[in-house]
Length: 236
Image (tube, rainbow, N blue to C red):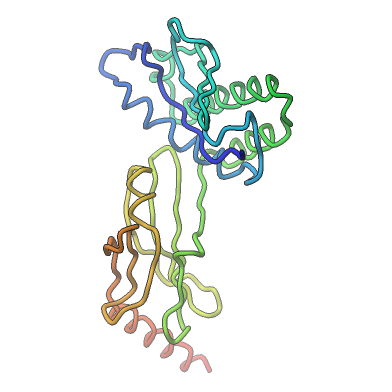
């Protein structure tokens, strides 16, 4: 089975510094694991499971590596949580990436899997400065007249996960950037933005149940189209 998900978080026995929680730590790792996963090839298997959980901190009586059907768990114990929270955002991201890379390489060694994709994704994650913008063709659409294109994007960084839309004209010129959601939780975004459509009310994004989770009013888009047409006419 190909690897499709990675989760990096604190182990059950991990102790956070005063004023910090396991939730704080787990949220701070999200962007690193998501950028890394986005840079991994779609068809790559480390240990035959679809998801790998990397638990950071003391493992107690548990084995360092456990494989349970479609999910495996790897415990990474050598980690200083106090120093982590004293570090700046970039240093924290690098610490998590190091844990992620070392853990996957250790698992790959156990199963004699190729380490090239892991090293390449780690290198790409560092080169990205821990920020990644992904455009989503499945959700992006053009206006009915084709004068404008609405390009839905997901932007991940240390400040969280943000979703938005770049509105461009036929020449590709950026006209407007719309915000869909700021600092949204990954689980919520995965469920909330599944498909899009045009209606008389405007451009809509729907969740998996068909509920509208975002709408940009049609009148606003048509107004922008008229402005673009007016500028083009003046130039021509």
